[in-house]
Image (cartoon, rainbow, N blue to C red; front, side, top):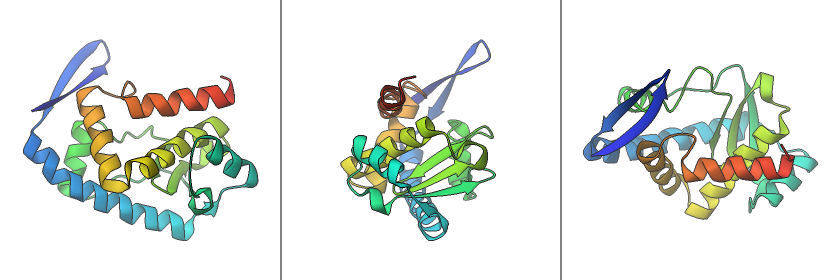
Length: 169
């Protein structure tokens, strides 16, 4: 069994995710992410020159492939099993302002000029590349969320620290 520790108000709650359910969800999550990446790559905008420089700075190997799609709301999985799993670990919330699916970045329209947020998401693109694609990244990311929690997960901490360092915030 894996456990996710999350804070809700002042109460700490534990959410149990059975290993077999996790293994079942992984390929579904990977397929969903790949499909969403295709949407962004087809409809999104390429990075500006300064964003390409930021992407290189954070280690993105192929910044010319990255696209950003401004949206009024970050997409949420509709597949019942994936939706249930995402809700159980609060992976997606109504307050989400960005989501990276390898070379595709969904960004809420109200935050599309937030350099630090974009850099944070570009770090995730770099992580996808370093880990070898959708399935390896999603496996590692979700296991970190389940076992450590957001935002303490190492992949999140790396993105937070790099964005802060570059933005000097």
